[in-house]
Length: 197
Image 1: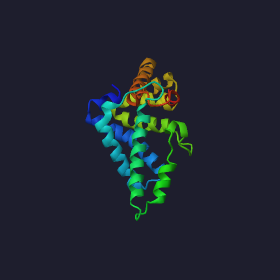
Image 2: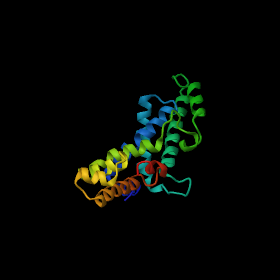
Image 3: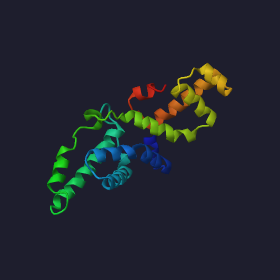
Image 4: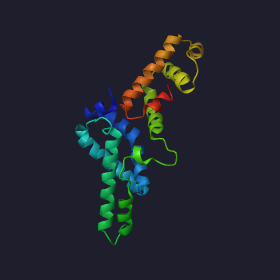
């Protein structure tokens, strides 16, 4: 079952996974929009509160309905709320600077305006997802996947090293990749998974 399906069913472990997987991305967006570290942390919490109360409203649509894009929209709205609040309090440190920051926030989703600094959102999500998934597999299954998919060793070499059959090594790789795809629920560019498969 995909992570989004498990979120809809209100599974506690799914919410922890979502926070570990997408929390750093929301934090990064907040920092790029000019929020301070503490405000960015608060924004992550606010976004996940909205997400928790509205996950049933999420509906995937062809081309534009990705979960990450929806999450970005929630994040942007919460950041705009933050800057509006600062702009209202003219005597505070915000004022004109807060209004300028709000106006300068990108109006396009991150896939369209780019993350800059050669940051690869998909690769980042894949790496975080893999770190979270490791404990879901037997050590030998994980090792076979890692040696073949990440270290680019042949099935024959990995089978010999781990005392498995070539078929068993390929099955281990397949099982982990299938779980990775389900965990990310097609949220990443196929090239990011293809790069490790």
